[in-house]
Length: 248
Image (cartoon, rainbow, N blue to C red; front, side, top):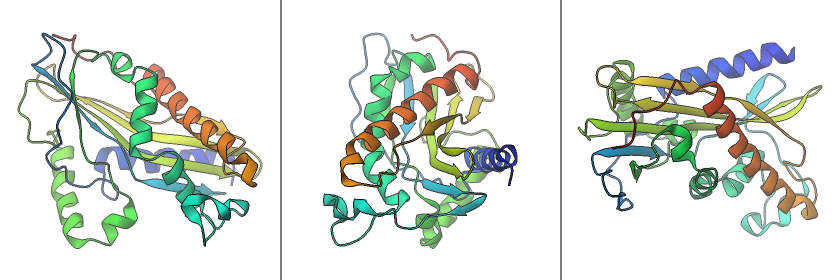
């Protein structure tokens, strides 16, 4: 399979995931306590959804990948050999995603520097959705709201936006190496009317991940997190539509 064709399929999958969330997104529940907003920013909200949806793509086949070998002795995986999905979950879980976004000042990059941040539950994996009929039913209703351009939380605040990480996508092609693609969506309702929606993903190469030997674990972690941050920064440059409404 040619690399461009493979990437085309990846892009199509990500686009579907970003718009519909038919296999990735669970129904939001009330968020826990959010940080105290800056003075004058009380009217503005940014709802942030990290993700637990890790996907492997190898030579044109969507798979979970097999065992990766020498990482079997890692503390988190004693007694079994880790898969690529296991490693992405360990190295780049929801809390780490949020920490990496903070490092690159993601609010300023999105144009919502003074918005009150509300962290929502992570978008779940396709496997989790398939295993839970109730969750699947909630997704159907949520999908209808997304297609209609409605909010996916109960907030009615006029100064409001949503930032979602839909998937963390490990892509490997035999002749072209490995890349990380992060499915991202920003929905800005603060301008009134239909939301301004920015979706898509960019790719960044991986050379050390997944680690093949125990001494490569830390370099692999650092590389994966760095690629995640770079994906976001390049996404804001290439995919973000204009700027969000100026902070109040």
